[in-house]
Length: 481
Ligand code: BG6
Image (tube, rainbow, N blue to C red):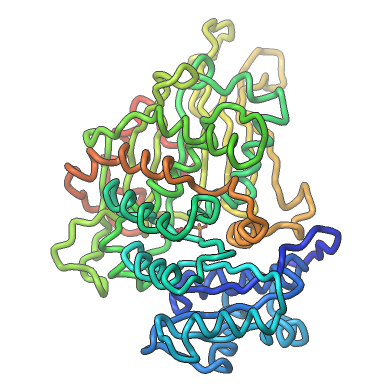
């Protein structure tokens, strides 16, 4: 269990009323409620705050029921079990409101009450943990009641389902909130190991000079999951692996990996550089994509019996700029796979001269690469060839390892959602997607969405359809190691 660290010397956000739409959903239970509790215990929440769980009339709870619900979610999903005294203090701030009820239990009245209790200078934070088609109504409700003032809004992914819907959604939201108030969240950008890529590249001269086409043969971003669709049949069947994981998480990781050095780590330069990568990302060629569906998916609750939604996807992407021209970026993710890992591989080129007698016999795919395991707590591994001890110059595979959990104070670690919720309260947009970036990604996706290749079946617990090797050929997938 993760011990809780206190960050008492850090500046705290202003007083906040935090309204969570979609409070009965999976995300609120797994991440948002436990995340807010951990921020509270770590001393990172504002001194004065209220959390309003907001749900539909049919799932309405009393405040006490909501506190019990939040407690259970925290016990089940927080890294640290709640301590009784701390939970009692946190729970005082929790209440339930009904969306879009106009009465005393409605959002408007509940926000007004919370603000009155806290006194002046309160910021409003709305977390829209709801599907893209439900966001519009909530945004209109907030705008029509003047609740958009002094407010920030978090929009969950996927942001739209294609270019047109993302544009419409951007249009709808910007009618009431300006871009500085909008935080399109992608929790992979809040992961320690993803942010560490910035440090690895730009705080060292060890790697960055190699980080380009002259030295890199290919890049892999591989996120297999053993998880299935976990009772999210209806959501998943209309979303699929590409929208759920690639347009959002994997492309964002690609942006961080491939970007040029920003002039600073503040929001504008950082997002400018990430968006430049998206601008030069070649539109997807459906013939470089494999879509898979695990056997038995169509029998899951909420899934159409003739569904062609993919639960697995592997694809080859290209970045047409002077740093990356000709270097394939291989992306893969899927449900019900053999293992759960989150692995980046930077495969380096081989030296032009072969002066070692057995150089050709050593498997060049094993040596000569950098692996970034970004599944919490994260690690980095350099694989290289070394001389084996003895009278002959015989090469063997050697490895150097860095593990977060035995190298730093892991107790300082914030889970991705915690980090990002804190950044929103502090008003820092650096790790959030900008409208032009997300629209460009849907543009890149358009040919695939228009003409997706047929889904190929794969066995649960496998590495996807048998054809998956063709995406990386003549290279290999690093996983399974
Ligand atoms: C979510 C997806 O955004 O990310 C899930 O909707 C996926 O399908 C999850 O399992 C993976 O994120 P993490 O951080 O829990 O590995």
